[in-house]
Every structure is written in structure tokens, then in C-alpha cells.
Amino acid sequence: MAIEHFSTLKQHLSSQIIGQEALVENLLIALLANGHLIVEGPPGLAKTRAVNALAQGLEADFHRIQFTPDLLPADLTGTDIYRPEDGTFVFQPGPLFQNLVLADEINRAPAKVQSALLEAMAEGQITVGRKTYDLPELFLVMATQNPIEQEGTYPLPEAQLDRFLMHIEIGYPDAESELAILKLNRGEALRSNANHGNDSSEKETSTKENSLRTLSQSEIFSAREQVLNIHMAPSLENYIVDLIIATRQPEKYDDKLSTWLAFGASPRATIALDRCARARAWLHNRDFVSPEDIQAVFHNALRHRILLSYQAEAEGITANQVLDYILTQVAVA
Image (tube, rainbow, N blue to C red):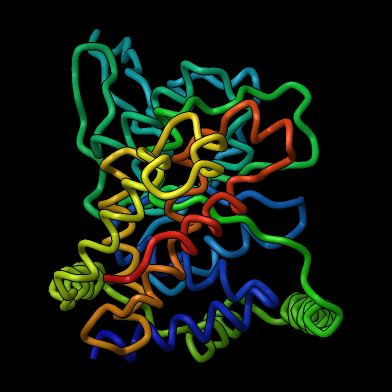
């Protein structure tokens, strides 16, 4: 059963990414919902490790791109290389042709680089010169942002943020998790030192013995099909639509809410909320969506899709507080 394999993968990720259960679950939700996610949190919270660990459990390639101000679109997409021996140009694919891509500190790259990534995320293809190249069918981008330091950054425009299925916020682990991280790191260091004394054949045998069963891409696509077939009652479909409409027409629900919102969520938010709720229900081994599934993914699917008013910002109101308030105003049908 695909759900059993995903449960095993989730346990593996939780053992490698300690104290970030929400990140682990939402990473799998994004994979099942065929979407991309942006993760915001301080440095050192295993964001890179999370995607790397996911790639180890999948039949997939992984590449990390460190976004910097001097990055060029060709550094992502690839470029045509001239061959002097026969006078022809040959396309050399860039890192975007991998299955899993980590765009580290995405807001440090200029707009032209962000637009190249935007095309890849939205269309599943890249354009170099006059030619367009399709990206792999299994393609997931996890972008990261550092909320602490904003000097020298290029804020992502709303149009690009809207392409991300979810916006995840993560924080520091608690004391118990911090202790577990310390022990895990020490154990990995000891194993690494021990491996230096082994020959290559012993290393290969050890790797095979400890390897995680990898999910094939066909299993992932099959799981996605099952997710789309999860039952959702018409009343819950109406509930999703009502939640989205509340961001666009807040005056219908509450005067205070109308003063907080400048722009509401786009139809992509409706689709994201539907897909994420279905994926969460499937991960929890249910064949139907519950109101809890919708509410659990609501903040992650919408916090980057609403634009707060100047009054809300002046009052110190955050997107999370606005979304909390919407949940109290919109009743489950």
C-alpha cells in the first residue's frame, strides 16, 4: 500500500528532522499535492537537511541552489555551450532539471532570476533563447527565506508568491528536541569517523544495509491520483469557497475584518486549499476530507496570498491573526 510506504518515509524524515513535525508533514503534503513550498525560519533549522532527507527516500535527484545577488538565470536553467570542433551549440541543462530543488534564500536573487524560477514552477518548463525545454514530471521546489536579516534582499512579488502551494513558518525546537538533535549529530559524527577506517567495499555494504526503501516515481504519481479521488462532501467544498470569499469580501462578515484586508486570495488559493486538505486526509489514512483537514492547512495555503491594509500593519496585526479571525467568522456548512 502506498500509504504504508509514505508512513515509513514520514517516520524516517521525523527521525532526521527533529522538532519540526509540521515541516515534515507539509513537505509530504506538497509532494502529494504536486506543488511547491516556501519555508521561512531562522538559519540552522534543518531546512536543507529536510529536502535532502526527502530525496534519499525517493527515486529522485536533488540539487541545492544558493541564491545570491550575482546569480544569473542561466545558472538555474542552463545555457547553450558552443562546440568549436563542429561549430554547433549544445544545450547544457541547469539545476532546475533535477526532481527536487532547494532554492536557498530565494529573496537574495534579483528579479530576472526569480522570473526564471517562476516559469519553471508555474509551467513546468524553462526557455533558453528560442527553445523551450520540459522539466521532469516529478518536480518540487522548496524555497527558503531568512526572516531575521533583510539587508540586500529582493522581496518576492505577490505574483510569484501565489505560485507557491504553501508558505510554512518554522521556529526553534523545544529543549527536549534540542537534546535529541545534539545526540543525533554526535552519533552521525561518530559513524562518519568510523567510516574513514573502512575501505570502499565496506562502505558500500554498510550503505545498502542501512538504506531506506525508496519510493519510485510511479508510486508517487499513483499516490497523487489517490489523493485526487479522496471524497470531499459538497458542504466542505462550499466551506472552502466561503473561506476564500471572506478574504475578498470581508465586509460581508465583519467590519473589523474589512479594515484589515487590502486584497484577498486568488483562485489558486481555492485550488491549493482543496489539494492540501485532500493530501492531509490521505496522509492520515482517511478516504474523506474533514473540516479539521481544511483548517489545518488553511494558514499555510493562504498566509502568503492575502495583502494586509496599512491600518492592519499600523495596528501590528499579522496575516496569521487575520486568518485566525476568518476561521471564527466562517461557519462550517
